Amino acid sequence: MSSYTIVDETVLEKLRAVCGAENVKADEKTLKAFSHDKVAEEKYAHRPDVAVFPGSTEEVAAIMKLANELRLPVTPRGGGSGLSGGAVPVAGGIVLSLERMNRIIEIDTDNLFAVVEPGVITKELDGELKKHNLFFAGYPMSEEICHLAGNVAENAGGGRAVKYGVTGRYVLGLEVVTPEGLTLNLGGKRVKDVTGYNLISLFTGSEGTLGVFTKLYIKLLPRPKHRLALFGFLPTPLTLNKVLPALLADPEVQPSSIEFMDSLCIESVKQTAPKSDVEITPGGAILVEVDGPTLAQIEAELQRVEQILTAHGVSGIRKAESEDHLEEVWKVRKQVPWALMRIAPHQSLEDISVPVSTIPAMLDEIRDVSSRYDVPIPCFGHAGDGNLHATPLKPEAMSVEVWLETLPKLLSELYVKAAGLGGTISGEHGIGHKRSSYMKLVLGDAERDIMRRIKRAIDPNNIMNPGKILVDED
Ligand SMILES: Cc1cc2nc3c(=O)[nH]c(=O)nc-3n(C[C@H](O)[C@H](O)[C@H](O)COP(=O)(O)OP(=O)(O)OC[C@H]3O[C@@H](n4cnc5c(N)ncnc54)[C@H](O)[C@@H]3O)c2cc1C
Image 1 (cartoon, helix red, strand yellow):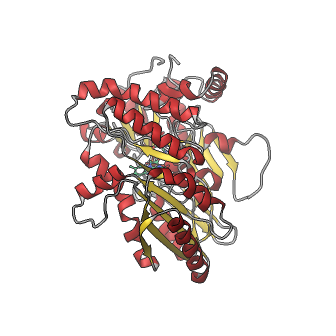
Image 2: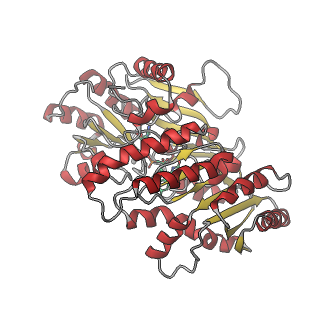
Image 3: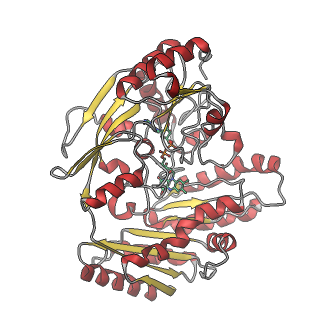
């Protein structure tokens, strides 16, 4: 990695002059809190030298100009819920927390847009939109803790992407401060725009490596009036082979979620929430949600979903007969990542993405790798999108040293298998620090080279979130 300037008292003074002394923090507690995201392993943690909390675009631009002039690394940070080490300052320097820039600037009910600052918590926007019967459809399932800019930076997906797509589909305007401190205004409240290169798409999913988002224009949809869901047990995970195409191609239904969790995931929920009345069955479970404008329409859709599932041997079906019961149906699925984190602090929550039809083959590969390495790999996720959260867990009997040696080999195998099926290593959590060394398994020299050249053109001094996506030695 390039050599950077050390953050000393002179640098701190300059930062205080931009943001005010109270918004420049270098105490132990703050630095420790900002040294990690939600990636489990401590080896991915790294302390910043200072955390800075700007309050405006002008302050962000001034910080970036200073950092570029002095060669200080800057890592933008949202809610810190990332699962790839993206917000972790691996080269030290400045963590730029956007949490003070948390205003919903406007909800434009005529053009169906929300204009927001980067640090708005995703669920809070949803709360406001609900009052206007509107919604932002590309939200991730961590909506209570993540920020909208973090969603854009990761191009997050979520539980409803099968019908509504991912965050990027709804980002039609961005204000971005570049690593050199220029403020770019891209797009806006317009649905169509082909004026030059699509820089919004380039910045979306750039994981804080190309610029800092300071304002977002999010396209909204009318809020579906009704939602219903059902949950049932698969005879075997292989049944997904038939169930998924049947659900996805049926002209009478358009599911808004199709989620899968295997028996190990359900077992983990039972272990951590013993009162849970869900059964553990070898085939795992499927959850399907539908939404729409009238109750009659989605009741008919749900009935059709039930017919399809029953025809493929899905049993023990529970239905949310009204929206009040929806949370109950979703409870087990939502608890899975937290239950796995509690059971195994040493783990690796993955998000392999494969063509939907290859999910059963990928599940077979996961079982094979699991048994050869003798490492449990529970698997859950957004089956309707082919996005699987395979989660290797350190077995109790394995030492941490052996685990840390084993994990990269195991992950390489999983990633190569996914690529062999036409898939890739990350569908929504991003590459960050955690997966950067695996990029060459799925992207060729030419693709990585063009990415590197784009990065160099926008960030010539490599100060913007260095050490992410593409590693130096790569
Ligand atoms: C229980 C759980 C469930 C999850 N479910 C999902 C899911 O369903 N779908 C999904 O996609 N993800 C999911 N995630 C992962 C994570 O929540 C998302 O990636 C989320 O979008 C990250 O947002 P954040 O604000 O926490 O970003 P952070 O973790 O703070 O940062 C993520 C990246 O965004 C960059 N960034 C942050 N703010 C800015 C900015 N203003 N400008 C430029 N770059 C910026 C950072 O540098 C970093 O690279 C889940 C995580 C957990 C813990």
